Length: 295
Length: 295
Image 1 (cartoon, rainbow over the protein chains, first blue to last red):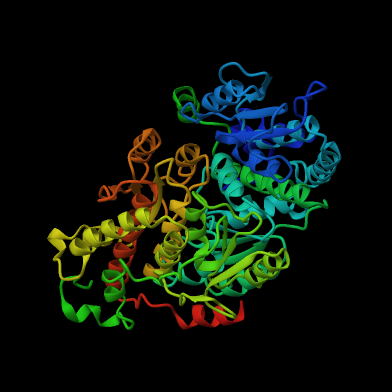
Image 2 (cartoon, each protein chain N blue to C red):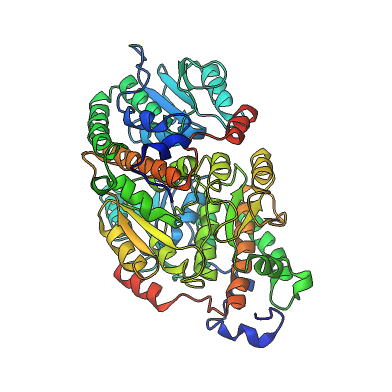
């Protein structure tokens, strides 16, 4: 097994993703001034989660006279283009953000792009105060999670070691909408590994899903984000059913979106380190790049 | 291993769930006449999926003068009661459906209750024509899937055999909203087993999630529902990454909701047979019943 404190073991990281992770806070396209309100936002491909987050303050479709943001995150089989055309036909001002044909604001395909879409939207729609809180939390985290911080002081490296050959089960507080799926997506993209996001009746799922094959199959690791009645009951249920229960450290952030993005950023670092432990390049594979051109 | 064509192997089925499955079409509470439109519906616990289905024709919250349906499916930590109280305070007529305190229409906790909530809502809100199509599809399926039909003629038994000691990965057509999660939930409840519902950027997930540990861990079975560009690309990607690819037979139904409910009913039968193969009682466990009283 590799050593997360040895420089040479990071050579598999062909795209220097550690540098992109450490430098992520503040790394997003600044919007030009003056998109007219009211706003609407739809998102596709790797931009699906930032669109869901934005739905906490922007609806899907704008009302008359406003701006419709279409986040083109790829792999959408033409849906983003269709959405943009429909909005234009209805007389909206359409702003296409992402990559592929005809974008107004470019965000390249990247495992960390959800942050960039979100921060662009926050700045473009008058939510820069919340955006500043996101960045402050991520900067604080980056200082403690980067590769230079040795394993004994680095909770993301510790997490990665605990996830080796285990399948994470994401357990998130009730208020964190879509976070389990976002963690499942980023863990797959960076660590190249499977994990389980539960369906909406998650407590029922945790009780029932391990009954037939308890203690068979891959060992599971419950990864808990946030502390509420639901996560406390989930931990009680899961303690006897999984190999280990791990809690994501409380985020250095306040507010729903800063808390969620901080948890996502922590899991991105842990996923990155798990890739290093598996000797896998965390950059996108050729297969994924090829599919992106087709779909 | 047990035999799905031997009467004695069904003795673990303490609640005669096979009878409930075969008799499901038509088994729902008939609404009294005259709930005033417009309608709204929110759903909790085991009623989360019927509420999502109903959102294809009913919004979450009713406008003034209408009826607010609150589906009390349990395990909601007080949320259903809060929603009902809030709707009442706003002057709405509230109809509470499900179990627990103060229900107007009773639907007992049951692995098959999503059908009952859905059919009640269809009849109560002028959608009985679609409901009739649901029932016709389920009746057709029941005739071919019940225990009396031997394995060689019974595709649900065949599915169950193919899922033994494998982890299903649900691959559903783009138009089938929330179906992967509904199948994950029902498979856990009846078969007591884990399965994987992908996050929204599912094609990216299928490419990336098996890279590090390809051919390690539990063998996976891709289970495909529906035929569109997305499922065809997913099957191309998954063919070299999973143990087997299985397609749910085309449903004897037309229309979005009848197709989805038919697929769910097929998976419920397959999950039931898998429980029998594992020698597990498919009825709810004591632990689940106890949690339901607490939460």
